[in-house]
Amino acid sequence: MNSDLELCLKHLKALVACDTSNPPKNIQDSGLFNYLDSLDYLKPNITDLGDGSFNILLTKGEPEYLFNVHLDTVPAGEGWSTEPHVLTVLDNKAFGLGACDIKGAAACLLTLIETGLENYAVLFSTDEEAGQSTCIREFIKTKPNFKGVIVSEPTQNLGVTCHRGIFTGTQEFYGIAGHSSDRRAMTDNAIHKLTNWCHDALISARSFDDKFIGPLQGLAFNLGTIEGGVKPNIIADSASVKFGFRPLPGQNVDKILESLKTTSIKNESCFTPGFVAPALPADGDMQTLESMVKALGLKQSEPVNFWTEASLFSEAGLPAIVFGPGDIANAHQPNEYVEISELSQALMLYRDLIK
Image 1 (cartoon, rainbow, N blue to C red):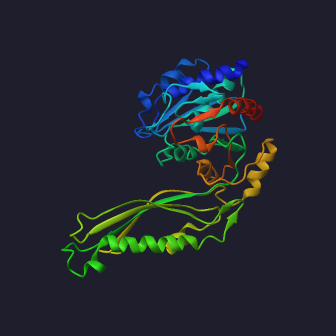
Image 2: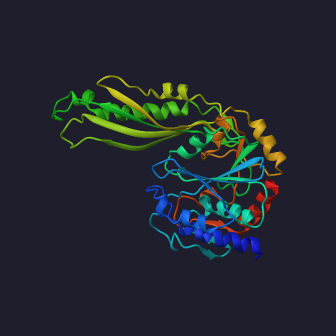
Image 3: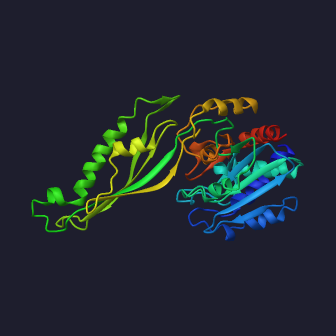
């Protein structure tokens, strides 16, 4: 194992030990700031955006590209064979919460900075996992001036230029409570209204199946949670469904919402949008991002289903790609890991990109 890789694993061990789970997003108590402060070669510019959202900007020289890495993780959950916050190296894999998503990339960048980079810009953020993206949205308001942005989500070190957008929302329905023996339950029950809407929404979502981008087809639509009712013998006076869909670049969100018949009608229903962000590229110009990947000497990935904050940079007019070590299939689950070989490859590729 070479010295750079050993140093990378040292940084990754320290980062994994910091409990940056989101929720609860107790970033200040996680040990993260103490660790970064211990690295005397860093001069971080930290912006506290409130509610556990922090931007940590590391810069030196006159870099062309900004690297973005979120340091928050999903909660550990059950089912781990190793300690989630103790980096464990087995069979050429580094196991630990966030090792893949995406503290491995952060460790690579810290390693390169420590070993003498003269030009770099790295933005660590802390609120990606809970569907907020306050960090990136606020950073964009500072009007950063870079040739492009590299968002270091796990892509197995391939350059991703295209992925789905994201839209979440809640559709509520209202009924008139009463005894279930009354036949008006058929029309006045909020749950009945909700199930009819869900049935129609699933059919409507299929109407977008004729659009393809690479291996991706149509609209990804999901009914997430349903709540409502009190007892079988009471007509439900309220019910709600939380849903989400993932549009392809170029699919019109307003037309999708119209097709799904999301409505707010007095005494009948109420629609509330949740987290909304565009696809990548936000403007549909895939050629610019493909040229960026080629100019950086990277291998290009096929379009992917998952969403990243690269689309927010793209929406703001900054060309952005997704590129980092790890496989997204190993994220958000027990025994998360990153291949040691991918960390080693990322160290070499990142160094070439930053020069």
